[in-house]
Image 1 (cartoon, rainbow, N blue to C red):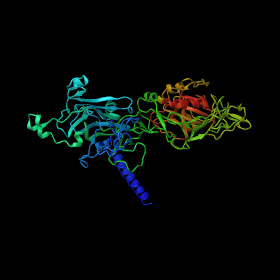
Image 2: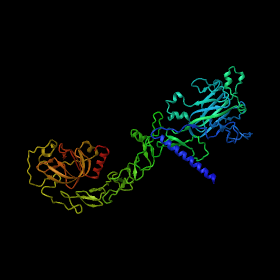
Image 3: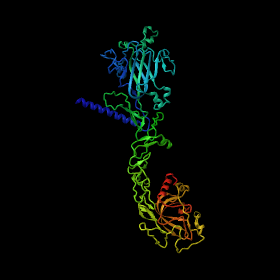
Image 4: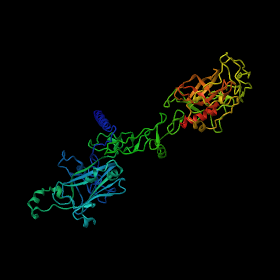
Length: 627
């Protein structure tokens, strides 16, 4: 029991250490590029050699099959694992090769995932090899690339010149010093490392690896001090122990400096396989990145599920920019998205995210529209789960769904249903003014000069008071006692008027065929209004309307409710053009009078009865931003 409790305590301490390390690393990554600390990739991992004993864990062999006559490893005092020892804590440990005299040997480090390697340092206990090669693989040993060749005679050993820029060098190949001689390999040339971003694809292509192989090709012995002519050479030739003298190659330190591959998006790494093995070397460099900047993957090589509005990019070490992934604009209706090059180009390089499986009855690349059969809730934001309401259309007054449609259609923004002739209302549940007899066939037009009872169709003939009169379409104003002067001076804004066409009481009906006709003339105001009554002021007419919707305002800020408009086509003959029929709803678009801000109706104004089709034309104009 005590042993189990101790293991659990060690595991808890270990993961607490990882969490503290991760939190510090994340703070380093806030709004800037970051990278995990560099360490020895060989620490905590098995180093295999050709001469290793088959089946020996501390000095494993590279042979996959047992040899015909395997030699016994009763006691390996210098296993390959000693090469990864800390030289400060264990200065007197080393690996001794068991290869026969004149035979090559090999040291191999196999990693569980991709890492980046900055440099390799070998400290030999024996004389350095006369010829050796350092190679890497980036595909788990399927193919190998030579990083550097070392030889006393590059031409004889490898057929290559020994000069600057060549793959082969004679540096680090002298037999002296006989011990503690170093071999150093830097993967990035110091002259170019300052201008090459280590997170760039070019740098990663040079530095990434999954396997490191050191081929010891030709051994050499320490020269006899008596045969040297210089006393200094005798000083650099340290005594060779018996164990080292018997081995063609002996290495006290293998330092493969590197870190996990995170493209500048992580400040720490965790075990690749999520292992909680507390026996792991605390100096071990782990391979799974603890990603920041909304990236994910073992190497932070892609954007997180809901952060694909821009293409993934590595961080920039030179500028410190994090190049973080951007969240898709799904308005809270999707859990994931993908990046679309087509959407990115069409947006001018500002947004390329396409949301997946939009919820809450929304559709669209950004879940920004209500799906068929639903419309926007007028008082809730688009991010609300209840932003889309189901369309409700009266089955008697609305048109049936089109073939293939499962439910009635309504306008996705206004909720206006498609009504039958003569039927109005958002849900097509009542007759329009001037119509009566609501039924499955729609509503029938009134046969009256004015409005009629919506149920019986009976004409409504009474006037209101002696100051407010209903003006019929293109008709005559009833005789009222007014003082009218023929020489009235009209303002410049009212010059266009049937005042100059006395006696012409017929009005030419104006039709609105498309949204472009509405957008062609820049009107000061565009409203939907119900005509309540007309007032004969003697010198001019004043029409009371109830503003239902305001699509555009000029200098005067319009609001819903009762307002006045001023038809200019008003004469002593009582003509009103364009038509304004009390009790009807119209789309009104016109100009304002300078100075007073009065809403004017002229022969150039838009005055058309409001229908669902007119509503669609107005919506199209709003979408095209011409209103």
